[in-house]
Image (tube, rainbow, N blue to C red; front, side, top):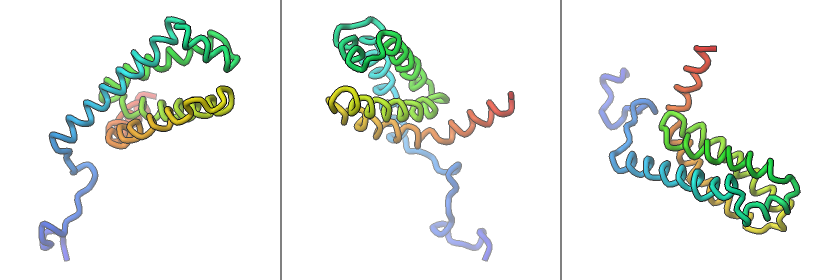
Length: 147
């Protein structure tokens, strides 16, 4: 039985053929913007300006200011990348790794203080990464062609 003879309800749509609804697209853009601003402003800014709360936490970790500035820089760059559609999937995946590290550091060096916050942030980051997977695949293919 060919696809032409199958009823319309029996055909299977490929992932590339599936279109997001307008409300899903708006929700995805809103989530990317909220996450991007959170990481670039609320999370990176205290680290990059050496706010007392951030320096205290990184002193407790024992790696000093260089580590605080490095994490702040990564968060700023990742937050900006979340705002750029073609980079948002890769940025989300990178942030998942960063959040796993943050949870580990919280458990190991900060007596488990707020260990759950990075895990909560992983959920919307995974949603963005999943929604942007086609963009991520295209980006990887484009980079491979240039190499």
